[in-house]
Length: 397
Image 1: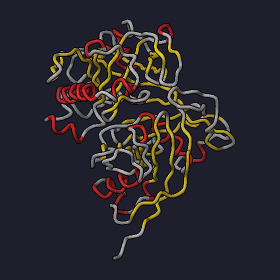
Image 2 (image 1 turned 90 degrees about the vertical axis):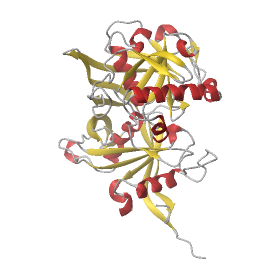
Image 3 (image 1 turned 120 degrees about the vertical axis):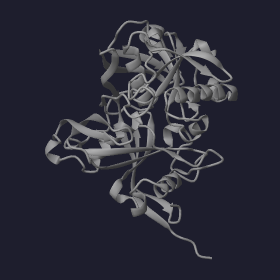
Image 4 (image 1 turned 180 degrees about the vertical axis):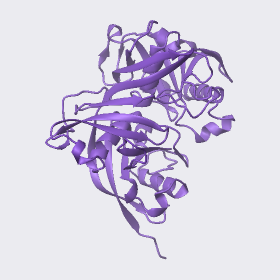
């Protein structure tokens, strides 16, 4: 019996923020996977080790969490005044699909560093020592991200003393700017940052009841609810949610109801193939708690607590894109996020998440009665974990 041998594909395994994934240059992929479609999806799934009914991804590069089941494709930019195009695939762990519906804010950090490592940035723009502004076209959502990457002796600086809660070791700080991060493409509001036209809605959730909700598209489409309204304090860690099947079902029902109300899907069944977006998050006023890393978080050091779901599980920290949504909603007086933070208008917020705290800035303005966000800013870090070739069976795609 003959067998198709494995193929070798140049790849880089990178951490970006509190996520990690396999990064590819577009031109290094097999020809059939250089275009969107089943061949690309099947190849990335096989690289990551999905779909895996055991939900372990033992036979692949994935880490069996939403934060580590990711692939990135980088290529020279198709857009003027940009260095690279960045395409992100969220690979489902145990079901047969790759979700291309949104961005990964954490791996956006890696995209900027990888662009430099791969030689995609004009050498004339790279200082010998200093900061290089890498202009990234986020191809999933058609948005600009600017990664301010530190350079030492002409190379990307990866080590440093910047600490990020949710990441064990310090590294070099990379500042990310998300330009005009509100989604323009979907929803009943015709591209409005608040697609229903309201800062707070009454959201009918089958099996749960009617909840107050703030639905926003900044960073990533997100449905915010009050922690207290769904029986939580807002200081929960992963086991309190992820070990409770009833809790997971309730939060997924909220997500589906929000997706329908935002116009992102037409039927509840469509949510099964759109798990990456929207996110559902619950917020609460600040309170003391002990983080998952046994770090004491004091209420006086944060503006609010926030917890968010990613691919059906409570995230161990906070997704970068959801952080943009939190900062933007916090800056708009009257949203649930803003009220949890004490109300008023603000240009930055520090929130507590399961692993610690994060500060994110957002610039918003009201134009003709419509709120818009011009920019969100946060600091992350990134480093290469391994580089070389990844192997996949030749008949896997």
